[in-house]
Image (cartoon, rainbow, N blue to C red; front, side):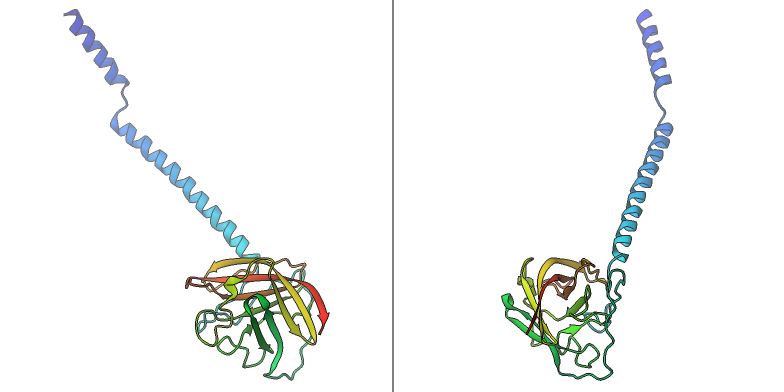
Length: 226
């Protein structure tokens, strides 16, 4: 009899100390809410950092009818003014891009020419500076893939340290590649370069990847008379 009474007392005390299911549910919901807040906060902060990094670089807008773009918006800080251009120009080549490693030697026309088009040539992106502009960025775009107009099809073979040459106005500009990276085809591409350097930028679709484009950044090392 005394043992049964003792068990009843112990069970009663246990039931009084045990947390009810409703309290457990409330605590669980509260912890879930807190967890969701921190996940959302981290996500928002990540997006803010991404947006900041993205907007502090050079962007170019995608032409709706082409995979390669025809417009660029360039940051002006740290760059020299581009010399005034003549009102007259020709559709003939005004210079050449040469990359010995991939046996590329292709001419380019004045960026105001109707022949300055990726469907016809390698294209100088609108807003690009020419090679003779100090701390400027000479930006060329071209197709990859198959067909006669895939002038940049072999760029994927390039590595950091490889050289490219621009022949322009009787001078030879020697560049060395310092950065090669991919970005998703979102209609915009950030160009990461040193604004204290004179640079050459090449843009094309990534080899065997329809979802990205590859950007090749090269810095000017030497200028010689041709």
